[in-house]
Image (cartoon, rainbow, N blue to C red; front, side, top):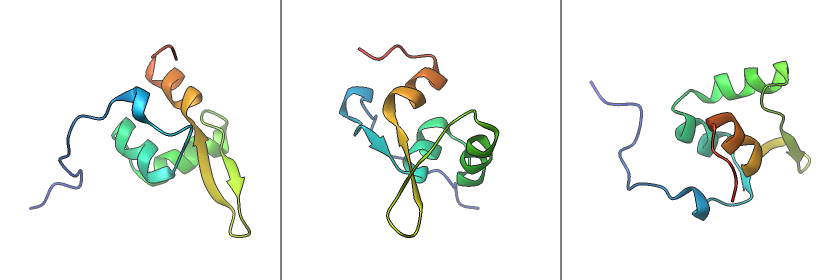
Length: 72
């Protein structure tokens, strides 16, 4: 059985871009992309819609706050 989470090097929170994709947020919070979308619908993690497809992006500050990390 394969692990659904990719093993990767430690990610420095300061190196994250200002806007994160669903996959980046899901990997960071160790939840599924569907969970991130549900949290957006409930207002727990608001998304910014970009382009004509309506792709979601999430502000780094909001994700860090959800993690309990104060942005520096």
